[in-house]
Length: 485
Image (cartoon, rainbow, N blue to C red):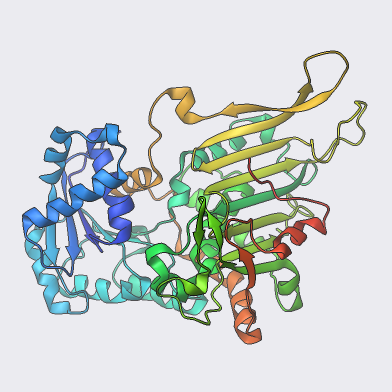
């Protein structure tokens, strides 16, 4: 569906890593597919560039991050005509008037996308306000992580709210834009087969994994101050948990869905004191082999402090204290330098009480519903069937629903969907202020305990699935992580 309302998209951090890898390629693909409508894209950067150099950098980014079969000269020519570049020092409020000159003077569908660190959000908002650039139809997109803890997130929320109403604020988590996450809602709430079994009576446990095979790469300066808990767990993992565990919303609108997600966060059982060391594992990658090549330990990465205690891996066992999920553990993990880049939600149903078939191991052959979000999106239902041949030998088989295979079309990237939603004023897949703060409220005791105890992350070999303690987290419950699936 094409955006019909003319727009102006102002991208702060317009030549940064996120803009080059994700945002500009997504905007180009929306343009190529005829869904972007009429509007301009203004990149704000501190670098002084002439038009040719600016466009050359954007074209280079598209060549690197857009599928080769989607790059056509005629589309690039038309897309480049939309692009503007404004040089601006974000710390100098008087310079924001330079941005004013590049934009229209009318109250247009205008989006300010802050692809910067959250410590700059307040200053940017103040600069926009002082230059008269915030109008009733203006919107602002905030990238994660918003804040460093509950207190800082609350302060940033309050500061942004001085200039924008809550309906104008879009807090983005790109995992919610993935096709499979949205299909999770349809699969649950449009099929009585699954919704009637989506509870503690039929589900044994649920695993959510976000693994990365890469190290910190060029983000060491940022990552060493943040770590896996703030970078991935507090937002991506908890958001996927909410989408998996939420109750059916009364209707399909932004606030109804976000109301149910907040209820999940409020129902999360707090992990405090000694329970933290029992239920939360943190690790830091050591030297090893990744992608067939030797890689250094985290502390030897360029830009990382020599005695860093920053965690690159987190696993946790969490519980939701409500009727639907009472007694069902959720195992969440994320880490860098793991064997594969993957994101999966694994719903394991309870084993049959007694098997009449020989060699059927009821625990390891229990039914599973697996939502795979990356690198390839799709859904698999794992069932048992008879092995071909004599006898009654039972084996596992998969019923697969892969959106790309089914439709024979390119599945849009998450940022394509979310940018389209922002420009269309659809806030369904974005976080509300109370949702953000509830997530920080639950995470804070863990972060404070780690700081007070000066905990040392458990080392794990690069290319492995993390610290041994993460395996024990499930093993003591008689379970195993779903791996290499």
